[in-house]
Length: 478
Image (cartoon, rainbow, N blue to C red; front, side, top):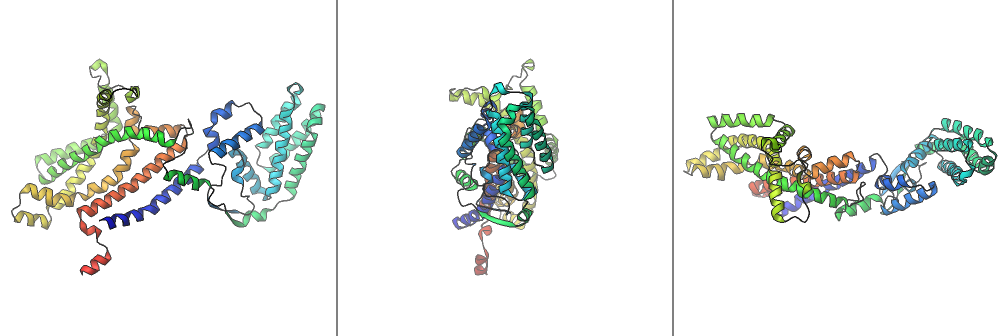
């Protein structure tokens, strides 16, 4: 059994590695700049110059390990530099890439953008008392040029800048040199394209000091990064939500299985009886009821003081103080969670009961069951010791998919009853674009899916030893 367990564990390890790579890749493809998202309030309230903002961005980027290459290597056009990851602000990187794709001459593109930044720095350094309409218009034109990624549009905007500078003598004196550098660098960019480099592939090796390597090591240590919203560890936020989700599903899933097994086995044993027909009708009726509708109805009924049914409160467990006694927690939790648990039990129970009934009907008609009855064994022993172990495989298979669902949380139930679990955390994180939390939950769900498959395989091997036999065993026994 141990050998079989290690073998299955080794087979699932590559799956987990692929899941880690995909999760990391998706986290880098989502819109927005991670550094800006994590420090949004600080950047929005800052009144510093662009130079100070760039310095602040680089500092935050270094602290978040985002100033490193994304992966161990990169397969890219030869025109692309290997230092794109060091350019601050995502919008600047996207503009530079757009310019490079039109020209292919990276040194010329970099020189042009640096000269544009120098002109903007000169404008920002001018005293406030020298402000004029021409200076305001020039500042707006420079900002527009900074966001322009089309050569034709940029040429028109540079012509606009050239027309604005002579309108103010002080402005002309201060910006003449910077403008000349900008004009020359742009002309050089247009007249020295290197488009052939865009079609020549190159492989760049970045080494182990990259974002994926550090993220992977962090994942192995349980470090899922920091939340964009409040800079708190993602693992701590998930752990808090996970405790509520496990509390709910820790009751719901075992109860659903116990009810499904008892009902399904009884329906199969009494196939065609009045009980079987009525149970089928009830199960189909429950299956047809949407969980969110049932949850809303129960919430209205059991939280309405006008009907004398003020059993739960809409505010949920959030009202509890951390210093409350265990008795208070158990009392409030039981009163608050019993309705959500019922909303989670009945959908799973209806499906599992039908699966149990179908599998048990097939098992009761097998030859080994007839043989057991012919030996004079008690009917209860025949059902539970012979038929049930063979009919339990569909329930075991379902457990493999229910385990990640149990930990991922019920989004609808937790949102309706205001339970601070994994489902509600996922919805809130997606709404606020808190991607580290979203991908942390996704990674946890993937890990639990793999664990669920492993537990299913072990349960198969425990119920039926033939599952553990490999080809060598079969050839030897033959």
